[in-house]
Image (tube, rainbow, N blue to C red):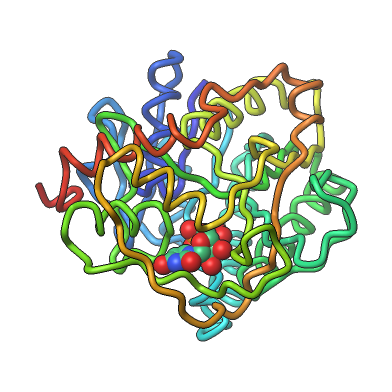
Length: 327
Ligand code: UDP
Protein backbone atom coordinates (compact mmCIF):
# COMPACT_ATOMS: atom_id res chain seq x y z
CA UNK A 1 0.00 0.00 0.00
CA UNK A 2 0.99 3.63 -0.46
CA UNK A 3 0.75 5.09 3.06
CA UNK A 4 0.91 8.75 4.04
CA UNK A 5 2.48 9.11 7.49
CA UNK A 6 2.06 12.47 9.24
CA UNK A 7 4.63 13.01 11.95
CA UNK A 8 6.90 10.43 10.32
CA UNK A 9 9.98 12.24 11.65
CA UNK A 10 8.79 11.79 15.22
CA UNK A 11 9.45 8.97 17.65
CA UNK A 12 6.55 6.58 16.97
CA UNK A 13 5.95 7.82 13.40
CA UNK A 14 9.52 7.23 12.23
CA UNK A 15 9.75 3.76 13.74
CA UNK A 16 6.37 2.80 12.27
CA UNK A 17 7.49 4.18 8.88
CA UNK A 18 10.57 1.96 9.00
CA UNK A 19 8.41 -1.06 9.87
CA UNK A 20 5.96 -0.23 7.06
CA UNK A 21 8.84 -0.18 4.59
CA UNK A 22 10.17 -3.45 5.96
CA UNK A 23 6.69 -4.95 5.40
CA UNK A 24 6.81 -3.88 1.73
CA UNK A 25 4.68 -0.72 1.83
CA UNK A 26 5.50 2.62 0.22
CA UNK A 27 5.76 5.52 2.69
CA UNK A 28 5.29 9.25 2.19
CA UNK A 29 6.17 11.26 5.28
CA UNK A 30 4.80 14.72 6.06
CA UNK A 31 6.39 16.46 9.02
CA UNK A 32 6.95 20.11 9.93
CA UNK A 33 10.09 19.16 11.91
CA UNK A 34 8.82 21.17 14.86
CA UNK A 35 9.60 18.23 17.13
CA UNK A 36 10.65 15.59 14.61
CA UNK A 37 14.12 14.87 13.24
CA UNK A 38 14.91 14.71 9.53
CA UNK A 39 17.47 11.98 10.28
CA UNK A 40 14.76 9.80 11.81
CA UNK A 41 12.88 9.49 8.50
CA UNK A 42 13.82 6.21 6.78
CA UNK A 43 15.87 6.93 3.64
CA UNK A 44 13.49 4.82 1.52
CA UNK A 45 10.53 7.10 2.40
CA UNK A 46 9.54 10.20 0.45
CA UNK A 47 9.90 13.17 2.78
CA UNK A 48 7.86 16.38 2.54
CA UNK A 49 8.37 19.18 5.03
CA UNK A 50 4.90 20.66 5.46
CA UNK A 51 2.53 21.83 8.15
CA UNK A 52 -0.96 20.41 8.54
CA UNK A 53 -2.16 23.91 9.44
CA UNK A 54 -1.72 24.80 5.74
CA UNK A 55 -4.71 23.18 4.02
CA UNK A 56 -3.79 24.54 0.58
CA UNK A 57 -0.36 22.94 0.78
CA UNK A 58 -1.93 19.67 1.91
CA UNK A 59 -4.23 19.67 -1.13
CA UNK A 60 -1.21 20.14 -3.37
CA UNK A 61 0.56 17.21 -1.71
CA UNK A 62 -2.44 14.92 -2.28
CA UNK A 63 -2.57 16.10 -5.92
CA UNK A 64 1.16 15.49 -6.38
CA UNK A 65 0.96 11.99 -4.82
CA UNK A 66 -2.21 10.38 -6.12
CA UNK A 67 -3.32 6.91 -5.12
CA UNK A 68 -2.68 7.15 -1.37
CA UNK A 69 -4.24 3.99 0.10
CA UNK A 70 -4.25 5.06 3.72
CA UNK A 71 -3.11 7.61 6.28
CA UNK A 72 -1.40 7.12 9.63
CA UNK A 73 -1.80 10.34 11.58
CA UNK A 74 0.91 10.73 14.23
CA UNK A 75 1.62 14.48 13.90
CA UNK A 76 0.36 16.15 17.05
CA UNK A 77 1.19 17.98 20.20
CA UNK A 78 1.43 15.10 22.64
CA UNK A 79 2.22 16.26 26.17
CA UNK A 80 -0.32 16.04 28.97
CA UNK A 81 1.60 18.52 31.14
CA UNK A 82 2.06 21.08 28.36
CA UNK A 83 -1.62 20.83 27.48
CA UNK A 84 -2.54 21.95 31.00
CA UNK A 85 -0.43 25.07 30.45
CA UNK A 86 -1.18 25.80 26.79
CA UNK A 87 -4.63 24.26 26.26
CA UNK A 88 -5.32 25.94 22.92
CA UNK A 89 -2.30 24.34 21.26
CA UNK A 90 -4.24 21.14 21.81
CA UNK A 91 -7.91 22.06 21.70
CA UNK A 92 -7.43 24.26 18.64
CA UNK A 93 -4.28 23.19 16.79
CA UNK A 94 -4.46 19.40 17.19
CA UNK A 95 -8.11 19.42 16.25
CA UNK A 96 -7.82 21.88 13.36
CA UNK A 97 -4.82 20.09 11.87
CA UNK A 98 -6.64 16.75 11.97
CA UNK A 99 -9.70 18.42 10.44
CA UNK A 100 -7.60 19.83 7.59
CA UNK A 101 -6.04 16.44 6.95
CA UNK A 102 -9.36 14.63 6.95
CA UNK A 103 -11.07 17.16 4.72
CA UNK A 104 -8.30 17.02 2.12
CA UNK A 105 -8.04 13.22 2.37
CA UNK A 106 -11.75 12.76 1.78
CA UNK A 107 -11.69 15.13 -1.19
CA UNK A 108 -8.82 13.03 -2.61
CA UNK A 109 -10.80 9.81 -2.13
CA UNK A 110 -8.68 8.35 0.70
CA UNK A 111 -10.81 6.09 2.91
CA UNK A 112 -8.39 4.43 5.35
CA UNK A 113 -7.15 6.24 8.43
CA UNK A 114 -5.29 5.25 11.59
CA UNK A 115 -5.27 7.74 14.45
CA UNK A 116 -2.70 7.93 17.24
CA UNK A 117 -4.99 8.25 20.22
CA UNK A 118 -4.28 8.01 23.91
CA UNK A 119 -4.90 6.45 27.31
CA UNK A 120 -5.50 10.01 28.52
CA UNK A 121 -9.14 9.47 27.45
CA UNK A 122 -9.53 7.47 30.66
CA UNK A 123 -8.93 9.80 33.58
CA UNK A 124 -11.34 8.12 35.96
CA UNK A 125 -11.59 4.48 34.94
CA UNK A 126 -14.16 2.37 36.75
CA UNK A 127 -12.35 -0.87 35.86
CA UNK A 128 -8.65 -1.70 35.53
CA UNK A 129 -7.43 -3.00 33.08
CA UNK A 130 -9.16 -0.44 30.88
CA UNK A 131 -11.19 -1.83 28.00
CA UNK A 132 -12.53 0.05 24.97
CA UNK A 133 -16.04 0.39 26.43
CA UNK A 134 -14.75 2.21 29.55
CA UNK A 135 -16.40 5.62 29.96
CA UNK A 136 -14.41 8.44 28.42
CA UNK A 137 -13.28 11.22 30.75
CA UNK A 138 -10.32 13.02 29.14
CA UNK A 139 -7.67 13.87 31.72
CA UNK A 140 -6.35 16.96 29.99
CA UNK A 141 -6.78 19.16 26.89
CA UNK A 142 -4.44 16.69 25.17
CA UNK A 143 -6.82 13.77 25.82
CA UNK A 144 -9.79 15.95 24.93
CA UNK A 145 -8.21 16.86 21.58
CA UNK A 146 -7.81 13.18 20.72
CA UNK A 147 -11.39 12.51 21.76
CA UNK A 148 -12.61 15.26 19.40
CA UNK A 149 -10.65 13.67 16.56
CA UNK A 150 -12.05 10.22 17.36
CA UNK A 151 -15.53 11.74 17.11
CA UNK A 152 -14.63 13.50 13.87
CA UNK A 153 -13.62 10.15 12.43
CA UNK A 154 -16.89 8.60 13.51
CA UNK A 155 -18.80 11.19 11.46
CA UNK A 156 -16.43 10.86 8.52
CA UNK A 157 -17.20 7.13 8.59
CA UNK A 158 -20.95 7.68 8.67
CA UNK A 159 -21.05 10.39 6.06
CA UNK A 160 -18.21 9.45 3.69
CA UNK A 161 -17.54 5.79 4.41
CA UNK A 162 -14.13 6.40 6.01
CA UNK A 163 -12.67 3.20 7.49
CA UNK A 164 -10.57 3.92 10.54
CA UNK A 165 -8.97 2.69 13.73
CA UNK A 166 -8.17 4.79 16.79
CA UNK A 167 -5.19 3.30 18.59
CA UNK A 168 -5.14 4.45 22.18
CA UNK A 169 -1.53 4.12 23.25
CA UNK A 170 -0.78 3.69 26.88
CA UNK A 171 2.91 4.53 27.61
CA UNK A 172 4.93 4.26 24.42
CA UNK A 173 8.58 3.49 25.14
CA UNK A 174 11.60 1.49 24.01
CA UNK A 175 13.74 2.08 20.94
CA UNK A 176 15.23 0.27 17.99
CA UNK A 177 18.97 0.20 17.21
CA UNK A 178 18.44 2.82 14.45
CA UNK A 179 15.75 5.09 15.88
CA UNK A 180 14.81 6.31 19.32
CA UNK A 181 13.06 8.73 21.58
CA UNK A 182 14.62 12.20 21.34
CA UNK A 183 12.46 15.07 22.60
CA UNK A 184 13.61 18.56 23.48
CA UNK A 185 12.88 19.15 26.26
CA UNK A 186 12.52 15.52 27.36
CA UNK A 187 9.56 14.96 29.67
CA UNK A 188 9.07 11.18 29.54
CA UNK A 189 10.07 8.97 32.42
CA UNK A 190 12.22 6.30 30.75
CA UNK A 191 14.45 8.62 28.67
CA UNK A 192 14.85 10.92 31.70
CA UNK A 193 15.90 8.01 33.89
CA UNK A 194 18.40 6.92 31.22
CA UNK A 195 19.78 10.47 30.99
CA UNK A 196 20.53 10.20 34.71
CA UNK A 197 22.37 6.93 34.01
CA UNK A 198 24.38 8.73 31.31
CA UNK A 199 25.39 11.44 33.77
CA UNK A 200 23.38 14.10 31.92
CA UNK A 201 21.10 14.80 34.90
CA UNK A 202 21.90 14.56 38.62
CA UNK A 203 18.64 12.75 39.51
CA UNK A 204 15.11 11.93 38.42
CA UNK A 205 12.22 13.64 40.18
CA UNK A 206 9.30 11.37 41.06
CA UNK A 207 6.10 13.34 40.46
CA UNK A 208 4.22 12.51 43.65
CA UNK A 209 4.42 9.53 46.00
CA UNK A 210 1.04 9.94 47.68
CA UNK A 211 -1.11 8.20 45.06
CA UNK A 212 -3.31 5.27 46.15
CA UNK A 213 -0.96 2.67 44.59
CA UNK A 214 1.33 -0.05 46.00
CA UNK A 215 4.29 2.31 46.55
CA UNK A 216 2.50 5.67 46.26
CA UNK A 217 3.78 6.45 42.74
CA UNK A 218 1.74 6.38 39.52
CA UNK A 219 1.17 3.08 37.73
CA UNK A 220 1.50 3.02 33.94
CA UNK A 221 1.38 0.38 31.21
CA UNK A 222 4.63 0.59 29.23
CA UNK A 223 4.33 -0.64 25.66
CA UNK A 224 7.23 -0.98 23.21
CA UNK A 225 7.13 1.28 20.17
CA UNK A 226 7.72 -1.71 17.85
CA UNK A 227 4.58 -3.33 19.27
CA UNK A 228 2.69 -0.12 18.55
CA UNK A 229 4.10 -0.13 15.02
CA UNK A 230 2.91 -3.70 14.41
CA UNK A 231 -0.56 -2.76 15.67
CA UNK A 232 -0.71 0.09 13.13
CA UNK A 233 0.27 -2.14 10.27
CA UNK A 234 -2.12 -4.96 11.24
CA UNK A 235 -4.96 -2.45 11.61
CA UNK A 236 -4.26 -0.71 8.31
CA UNK A 237 -4.13 -4.01 6.45
CA UNK A 238 -7.42 -5.12 8.06
CA UNK A 239 -9.41 -1.88 7.82
CA UNK A 240 -11.44 -2.96 4.81
CA UNK A 241 -13.03 -5.73 6.83
CA UNK A 242 -13.03 -3.87 10.15
CA UNK A 243 -14.71 -0.58 9.26
CA UNK A 244 -14.70 1.44 12.46
CA UNK A 245 -12.53 0.41 15.42
CA UNK A 246 -11.03 1.64 18.67
CA UNK A 247 -8.26 -0.35 20.30
CA UNK A 248 -6.56 0.15 23.66
CA UNK A 249 -2.89 -0.73 23.32
CA UNK A 250 -0.75 -1.79 26.23
CA UNK A 251 0.90 -4.81 27.80
CA UNK A 252 -1.88 -5.19 30.34
CA UNK A 253 0.62 -4.95 33.18
CA UNK A 254 1.22 -1.87 35.29
CA UNK A 255 4.49 -0.65 36.77
CA UNK A 256 5.02 2.14 39.28
CA UNK A 257 7.45 4.99 38.70
CA UNK A 258 9.68 3.50 41.42
CA UNK A 259 9.63 0.09 39.67
CA UNK A 260 10.68 1.70 36.39
CA UNK A 261 13.60 3.41 38.14
CA UNK A 262 14.59 0.17 39.89
CA UNK A 263 14.52 -1.79 36.60
CA UNK A 264 16.63 0.90 34.93
CA UNK A 265 19.17 0.59 37.77
CA UNK A 266 19.38 -3.14 37.06
CA UNK A 267 19.70 -2.69 33.28
CA UNK A 268 22.27 0.14 33.40
CA UNK A 269 24.20 -0.71 36.55
CA UNK A 270 23.93 2.95 37.58
CA UNK A 271 22.51 4.01 40.99
CA UNK A 272 20.08 6.55 39.36
CA UNK A 273 19.32 8.86 42.31
CA UNK A 274 15.65 9.78 42.69
CA UNK A 275 13.99 12.58 44.67
CA UNK A 276 10.28 13.00 45.34
CA UNK A 277 8.58 16.15 44.07
CA UNK A 278 4.97 17.33 43.80
CA UNK A 279 2.35 15.67 41.60
CA UNK A 280 2.19 16.70 37.93
CA UNK A 281 -1.23 18.15 37.03
CA UNK A 282 -3.31 15.91 34.78
CA UNK A 283 -1.72 12.59 35.89
CA UNK A 284 -4.22 9.85 36.84
CA UNK A 285 -3.02 7.36 39.50
CA UNK A 286 -3.34 4.16 37.44
CA UNK A 287 -3.55 3.54 33.68
CA UNK A 288 -3.36 -0.08 32.56
CA UNK A 289 -4.82 -1.31 29.28
CA UNK A 290 -6.86 -4.29 28.37
CA UNK A 291 -5.79 -5.08 24.80
CA UNK A 292 -7.99 -8.15 24.48
CA UNK A 293 -9.95 -6.69 21.57
CA UNK A 294 -6.99 -6.15 19.24
CA UNK A 295 -5.50 -9.48 20.30
CA UNK A 296 -8.74 -11.27 19.44
CA UNK A 297 -9.59 -9.38 16.26
CA UNK A 298 -6.16 -8.91 14.68
CA UNK A 299 -4.03 -11.54 16.43
CA UNK A 300 -1.79 -8.75 17.77
CA UNK A 301 0.81 -9.92 20.31
CA UNK A 302 3.40 -7.72 22.00
CA UNK A 303 6.96 -8.88 21.30
CA UNK A 304 8.25 -6.96 24.34
CA UNK A 305 5.98 -8.01 27.20
CA UNK A 306 8.39 -7.23 30.05
CA UNK A 307 9.76 -3.95 31.37
CA UNK A 308 13.35 -5.14 31.44
CA UNK A 309 13.57 -5.90 27.72
CA UNK A 310 11.84 -2.59 26.94
CA UNK A 311 14.27 -0.58 29.06
CA UNK A 312 17.22 -2.58 27.70
CA UNK A 313 16.23 -1.59 24.13
CA UNK A 314 15.95 2.06 25.18
CA UNK A 315 19.30 1.88 26.99
CA UNK A 316 20.94 0.51 23.84
CA UNK A 317 19.76 3.55 21.81
CA UNK A 318 20.54 6.14 24.50
CA UNK A 319 23.96 4.64 25.23
CA UNK A 320 24.91 4.72 21.55
CA UNK A 321 23.16 8.10 20.87
CA UNK A 322 23.79 10.09 24.07
CA UNK A 323 22.81 13.30 22.26
CA UNK A 324 19.96 11.72 20.28
CA UNK A 325 19.88 12.51 16.57
CA UNK A 326 22.58 15.17 17.06
CA UNK A 327 25.18 12.41 17.37
N1 UDP B 1 7.15 10.86 35.76
C1 UDP B 1 7.95 11.18 36.88
N2 UDP B 1 9.05 11.94 36.68
C2 UDP B 1 9.44 12.41 35.45
C3 UDP B 1 8.64 12.07 34.34
C4 UDP B 1 7.51 11.29 34.54
O1 UDP B 1 7.64 10.79 37.99
O2 UDP B 1 10.45 13.12 35.35
C5 UDP B 1 5.97 10.02 35.95
C6 UDP B 1 4.67 10.66 35.51
O3 UDP B 1 4.08 11.39 36.56
C7 UDP B 1 3.84 9.43 35.10
C8 UDP B 1 4.88 8.42 34.62
O4 UDP B 1 6.12 8.88 35.15
O5 UDP B 1 3.19 8.91 36.22
C9 UDP B 1 4.98 8.36 33.10
O6 UDP B 1 5.10 9.68 32.62
P1 UDP B 1 5.46 10.01 31.12
O7 UDP B 1 5.59 11.50 31.01
O8 UDP B 1 6.62 9.19 30.70
O9 UDP B 1 4.21 9.49 30.28
P2 UDP B 1 2.64 9.85 30.39
O10 UDP B 1 2.09 8.95 31.46
O11 UDP B 1 2.51 11.30 30.70
O12 UDP B 1 2.13 9.49 29.05
